[in-house]
Length: 558
Image (cartoon, rainbow, N blue to C red):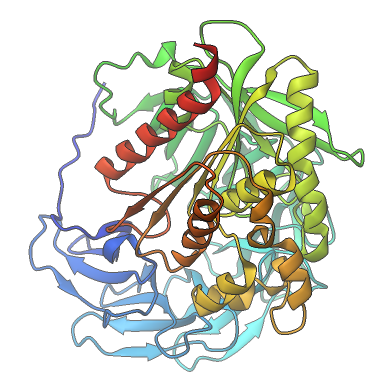
């Protein structure tokens, strides 16, 4: 087995968030987050780390790396440098540093692909979360053509040109519930044609072989992935590949199509790089992450459990049980971010740390989660969010009634929108949880809209409510107005450079609970933004989370 050795190329406090090779292999373009914030910037450097220079202007603007131009002389990227409340697409000359805007308008625009000569681009534009369009854009004159006329909401993702440039492939849920693989023939002026679809799973990623005959498809089944190799065109099931982990992503075919590279992770598998021989089906591991002293096989697995919400809606979640002891366990209910994210059986070090101490974890996918179809992901929009909050209680009661968790020894935690659900759960159901951990979560929708990135605020009005016309709704949905009901000890963790969920969200909770002498602790990381990337900060956060739940879920019984 040949294992790749990772060699660091940068030595700065700025967190790399994306890397792209130039077509000739002479340069690397790197997207970096100063202080972990969302004001990402773009550098280029040689493969040996030399000749590094910054191409974007710095400051507070957000810059998202797209792709290199085919001639290797320019970079395509998105930025809000001209209008803070939207992301436009630009072409940047790496030799002169000159930048030219290719698209403008409301929402967030990102470059999905370029054709062989780089003259035509596929641009995705999101006006509201959960609804997107694909445009065909002329890179020379900026002329734009809408390819995805539809009635909202519907999404078009991962748009790619066919090798000859005459067609476009994309993932879409237009006119159907579960997202599927579609193709549009540009010259024929035809409509999108479904190539591969399933009623029991959503397509979340695909890769095309250079000759356009083979496709690798990733199907999402309640959070677990299935990798399929299939021949195009046609809607016949292909070969399913056996995987060592539950989640696969970042698919890339070799030029000849004989090999497919991918990243695989799972509940007991840190993310690793693998290569699949597309003829034999043999899967080889190319890289191995160090995990000194940790026996991966001894870690806890994830088990999918199904249950029902208060109104009869089917829900599901992933249960992690300690390897020792027996149910009912002290249990932490962990809510994902988004809200249109999805809980999947990925490697979660904080979960395994809790499990090692005898605390189970249940990670639900309540209404509003992605991966379960168009209807389900939109069931928490606006005033429907009250039902999503009721899902918190339905989840806790299911765990207790099923004998999985013990009443009085339930905790709740989550990050970002999961932090919102944590505070909503503690305020709405004050006797249900014995302790909570809020990681950089929203608590007041009005201060969130006022303080978040303007482009984020612009696309979030359908999801949460419009602060200009639905202020009463935002107040009713904001836990900040019910913090006087919170009884459970609460730990808050936040990054000082967070411009997605501003620090004031955490500060409002800390101040309110301290006034009432509710046990509260607050850890502010000065070098982090939205989420924790620094290794020592992650260790500090995980240690604090485990200690908090040990103190309040186990201490009274020891």
